Image (cartoon, rainbow, N blue to C red; front, side, top):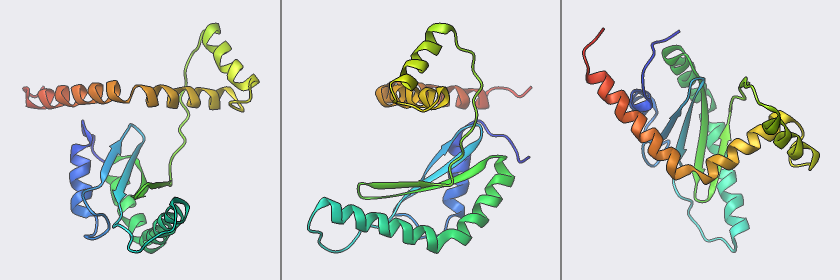
Length: 173
């Protein structure tokens, strides 16, 4: 199912070459995990004056919706090519000003084993109405950790990229 690659750099290069000129104001952010590739691009700025933040946000959301509709067929074609090449589903996202919309995202089951103290935390979140299920509570907890650990996670990803680069420079097996 496509070939395997060690980092998102190759995929980012492929998408940069494959995407039509003018879709985004710069090269899109390409986010890769084991199941999915997300393409996040910045749309051209809006013209015009807006009376308040709500009006501007509505205009941004409208422009993103228009871009999504106008590019649908071509995005589907590009996604099919990428899915064949990389063996992963492709999701799309667009950002304009302070508005970001993500579409066609996967929800992937993740199996885990938790001991009673961890299960009690999830059950407390469910009992308090923060989440409807243990699964939703776990997703909530992961988002919270991600939000508070962004800098550390960024450093960790950067270190992993360096390891991938060094591994690629080494002798083949």
